Image (cartoon, rainbow, N blue to C red; front, side):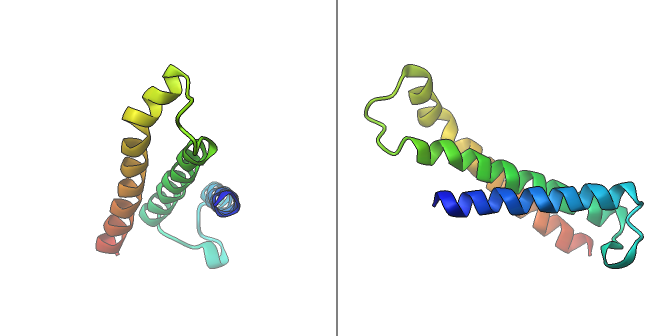
Length: 102
């Protein structure tokens, strides 16, 4: 699992870097020619996927959650699942919005 999450973070960082470089050039060069709307969809998709992969890191760090400090216990009890659900749902909604826009 850590190897897959690390791979997801690396690929999303590369994707985000390519989208930022394409945005600086105006998005009208070669294979990266996309509309501004599609560019925004893809940029936000990369950001939400990067944050979703990053939110999985604390979830796998403490697999044995019987001995946690109060802040970590609070995070796992009230914030961990809602944050992951919100980010993955946002990712799905971005893909749906891009599909409808296209």
